Image (cartoon, rainbow, N blue to C red; front, side, top):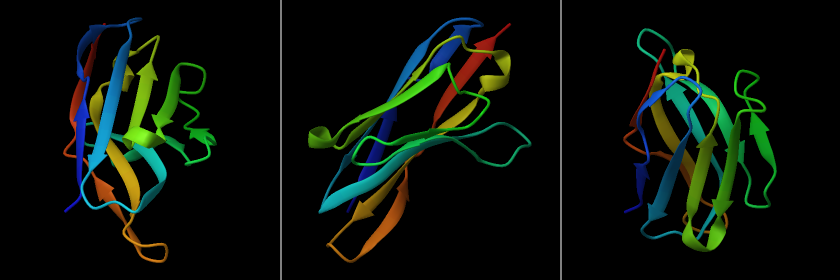
Length: 120
């Protein structure tokens, strides 16, 4: 059983910073892509940032230059450093990981989500 556990959400004023963490545990052969998505009330879940196991990162235009995604492969952990936060960044943030059970079989897993609230 694979589990993703997120931490680091909370309430912050506009212009502030938060750092999210997500650790994967369980029967893991390897993890290819990891990423963060978010969903605000009334909106669809959207991509925030992803990172491959070789460190190649991709960002949504709305967070480019403010957020930084990174990972520690040895710890099966992905981070999201969020700076210059805006009220429109308020959402539930979800961790996603492409978990490989064997070299050929994999499936995506989601964390339960962590709330980020940015006050104006």
